[in-house]
Length: 327
Image 1 (spheres, rainbow, N blue to C red):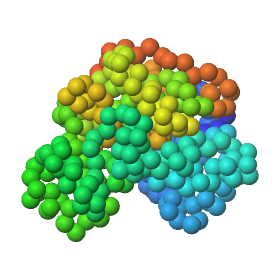
Image 2 (tube, rainbow, N blue to C red):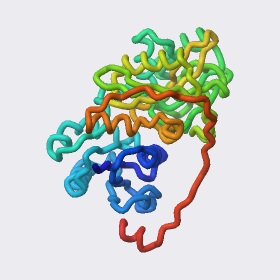
Image 3 (tube, helix red, strand yellow):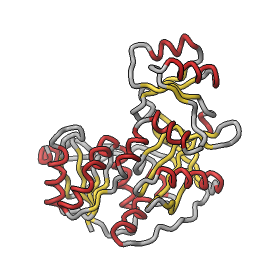
Image 4 (cartoon, rainbow, N blue to C red):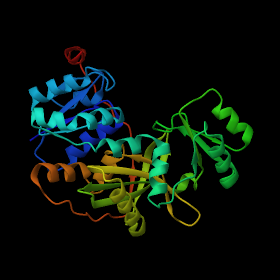
């Protein structure tokens, strides 16, 4: 069995690769990335360079790689690839006899746009942070008057807390919005020590397994995580997954409001950067999805024990000739 993971230079792609290493699958790993300096390309004997996902040549080049490497399944390792793969999934699977682990265009678009994320949860009857588009003056006024300050200003499309600010007054809000486009203003929910990342595996609209972890952030990424059973939160996460209907994995990031209800502020319609952390405590969603898609195995809920997960950096030394060979 062969597995092609793209985004070998990204936290997500490398996390998927590490989850595969932890699995019991007898899989040959193939890696792809736009840069020959991506560490993940040097973790495997078979690696390829691809254009950036917004390059018109991306799909054709990916097809060439699939035709040559013949992976049984392709797993995207960056957000940027999701939309283009969702749009071309059917053709790639048909033309090359492989499987592309990506959700449909609707689910990907909801997750990619934080205002659409708010609309999705609000329309589905779930608790969502009050949100407004700054260009809609009436909508913005209503949020300011209803929930007050502090408020969070963030890009509608973005990740890792880049471009995010917390404002505590009208003057700060005006300054945060000045000269910027593509933003959303949201209610500030909970506190930093009450933030959670949760994942669910869904097939045929049915949630099959889920896990909730409380987390500590550094530079927008999880660097400490804490697992418990969290039965009530898992029930909610499964309801979120059933409503979204992804193909395989979905990740929900949320805080608890004053009533203790989970309030989701971000969806990742894919595996996430915390995938290897979950695999480390027995929730290997990468293996679950591969076994279900390729072998028809049922996805079952593993037992999640109380654990503390501490993240750390590591290194790899690569001979210049190996980098030049890829370049």
